[in-house]
Length: 397
Image 1: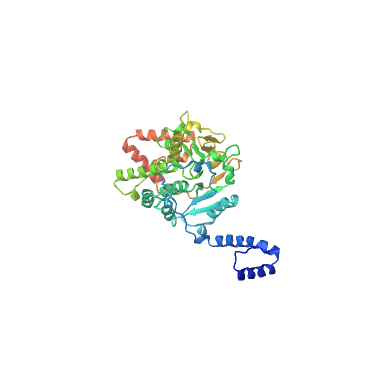
Image 2: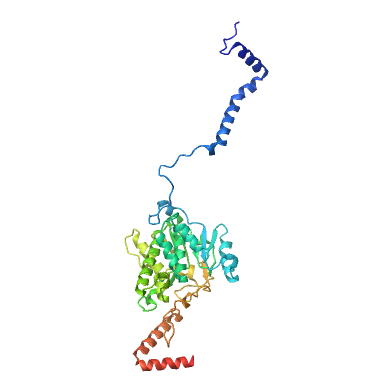
């Protein structure tokens, strides 16, 4: 029988035949598989050396802060982050601050915990609101210009909640329950954008010349938010306009404006925060207007157009007013110790020369009524008699 015709030269064919005869048949059959594996290995080994294809849209840029958040921003759960702000870093905390801070990490071990301080807050704002972030240089300039400690603290919490979201709590707020208790099981977290608590619910004083602006408010010493909520940005922009107007009226730079207690409360604090939340609720679709009446005497939590409002006991128990209950109740989630709340000394309340501050009544109806009557009666006296009584009080005080 004739041998098959080989395409190789006689010498090469002879050599190949000899080589083939020396290799077992099973091994010869696996050689192609080995070669394929080697090729795949070489491709993976050199994949970083392959040129990348540029994106059609060019360099990736972060979204502008003025843009509305995408639907995915609202559909995700709340970031597992806890934020606090203070003058110094946690390694230098006093024992009382360390104790309250530890309650947050112990009850929420899977959460990231971070404290922004007087030494790193400006860097944080520049990083997130500068050209490489939201590109809002006006906000950076505003934050850099403000010197009032409480105004800066209010701005910082709103900016952090806009940029990253999570839980914000003042440094003197103790966690009593884990964060997952902030949202009752009957609610779908994906449908909630912010969790708030009632702080003061005394609407009967809404027309009082001093207590009125503080009589209906949500708590802003503790709240939870998803990132990029427009309400946080609108609040900061409103504060920016307000401070600019105040500076113009006082004919001074923003860093030199002089503000009293009520101006701080209504300009950047709980009253401003509450007004922004109610306005945002009404911006969202709904048949009826939302007012404080929707949250007066709130017994249980209530979700209104993506905002979950907890009753006063949740974040503001133990106040002695607004039917706030006590910290031993199951519904109490945090405890505010107030040891860091000394800012009113720099922004004093109205203090009558004879009858002092009406806030000392702590919303007790009889006390407020008597204070009002006494102040009104004093105002009817002739100036000479008023000064006489003031002098007598100063002598005996």
